[in-house]
Amino acid sequence: MARRRSRLPLTLGAIVIVAGALTAAFWPQPTLVDLGTVARGPMMQTIDEEGRTQVRDAYVVSTPVAGRLLRVEVEPGDPVIRGETQVAVMEPLNPAALDISSREQARAAVAAAEAALRVSQADRNAALANQDLARADLDRARQLAESGTVSAAALERAQRAARAADATVDTAEAAIAMREADLDIAQARLISFDDQGLWGAIANDDHAIPLMAPADGTILQVIQQSETTLGAGTPIMEIGNIEGDLAVTVALLSTDAVQVSPGDRVIIENWGQPVPLPGVVTRIDPFGTTQYSALGVQEQRVNVLVDFTGPGEDREGLGHGFRVELRIVVWEDTDALIVPSAALFRAAGGWAVFVVENGTATTRPVEIGHNNGIEAEVVSGLSESETVILYPSAAISEGHSVAQRAVN
Image (cartoon, rainbow, N blue to C red; front, side, top):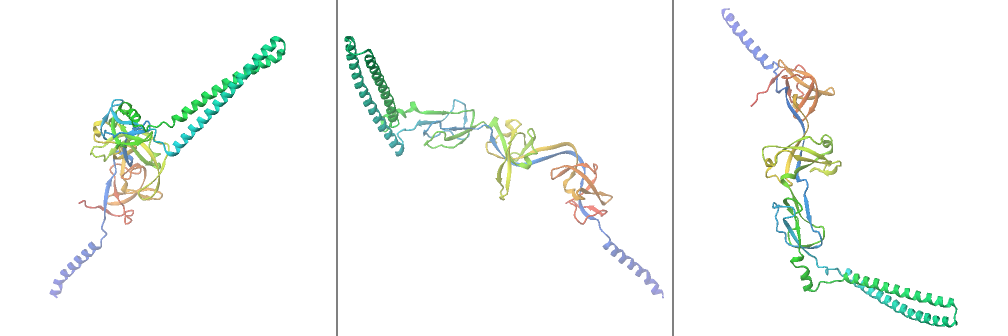
């Protein structure tokens, strides 16, 4: 009997320990979550896109006439001065280099002009013969009129015929002058410089055409460097002022371009140095172009021009056609109430967050203003310093017990 009594406390103790262990094992544990804080501070909403630098007013030097371009000696990066630096030299093109069809047409035109001149000369000879006959008739009519043999009317007809013959001769002389001019024009088209002495006289150094720099700046690129024969208007090189006229062009989606306005602040990053460069939007093209993304998706893009606003020495080394990344600021506030965007989720057609109060999750509808994907502007529904759950999962519901996950 005494033994049974001595075992009773041990049994009861074991039962209590087992019950406590089972209770602790199956007691609901708080869900570990990441927590964030609602705070006040500066916030901005930007449109991020990749852009290219370009000289805003680049000059393309082209051939003024058809001719032979001598080898270009200047190199990209060389400085030039407007009207002083010679960037290229041309020589006149040999006009004898006609194709066969053009040459035969020119020869036919010369033959036609010579034949027309002979016709005009024959017409003049006929007019001179008629003139001699008319003058002889007039002399006889005057003699007969003095003796009273012919009437005054006959004398007048003879005078009129003589004047008409003189006019016909003048017309024939003018026609000959016209035909001679036509012949000169046709022969000019056949001027040949196959005579090396004549061609050398025209193509000597005195007749070389120097091409001078049209503006102050730097040689951006040489399009045609080797000696060759070019037609009029062929591009040779491009000149621009990198130090004072460098800008950035960016092709925005049309849905993003409508949010941008001239004067918007721009942050230029990842251009090769760790310090961002300031800029400002100066122009938005009024038309869009169709482009295709790397995945083959058709997009409407609008070109936007951005000017640098900082001193030129801050972007030393940046040239024409360099890649940069831009953040165009379309909205910013220096004292906004901010909640992490990761805390937001959709509820009842609007936005909501889980606010943690005394270790318990409480659903709170909120009104959101601007959202840049990382931070969101709180219009109403939250107060500064409140704690919210980040990345809320479907396992969290109203009144759920939560605890902060340990940060490694």
